Image: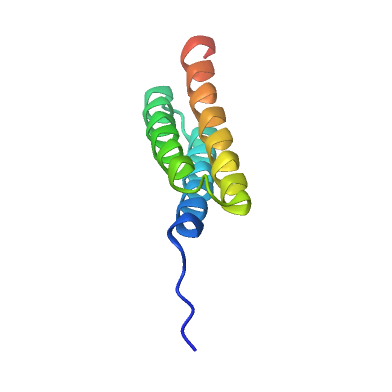
Length: 84
């Protein structure tokens, strides 16, 4: 039996994936500019996912978690730029 996956569920998974990748990259990277740009792009993608996933609580939680991780990645990039 075929079970279609809903768009909010895909948006939630995409948001958490982007958040984890950007946070991991900002911890590993020695380039503060790359971490800032990738984190900002992650924030943008996560905000779009948040808009798509706002009708379901479970997917909304994943989108918010991804947004939080992308914001942390951007903050780490700014910290690297001004403190290292």
